[in-house]
Image (cartoon, rainbow, N blue to C red; front, side, top):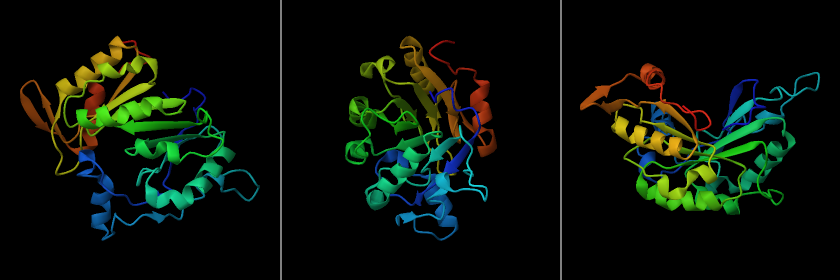
Length: 251
């Protein structure tokens, strides 16, 4: 999980925008949906006006973003996308400078990780959590062995959008993962999320002493033989009502 030192809220840092679809989880990407409404081509990766957000200062010289903030990093692209190779070193410099912040990065490109880290990365930065997304068994089997062997201090598996049952037992996640997050798919074209898939992930986490967070139901949620259509504003709250989250592997 995110280190306990991060207690002063969170913010968003989208330093570049745009992406390319690489696996089934990308099919109904929220970035593409949003860009389509604004007639923006999501395949074009561009540096944003907020690129230097972490190091911006007030008139008195203090950083605008307070120490201890959690920064959700690059949520309208992928931090390891090859289009951004020319900008990433500068991004790492800012992450290094703001070692009083914590940066959370979610990627579907963990296979590019080793060629995208700075020279002083070592076994990872204390202030960086890198999360690996796996939406089905095929991509769990491909990405998780790479993820396990990657030098990262804080690791979270993101099973979202959860498109089928995923067996994490073979990966012995209790030895190297901080948390597993599960959630369905949102949007008008969402694919169904089966509650049994979520419960199976939870059971694996419970048996291997790993934190588990059922983040959201998604727009189409199958439970007890019935498919429910759930509006966007209720998808997180309905997941909370299930009361199946696990903190540090304990119910």
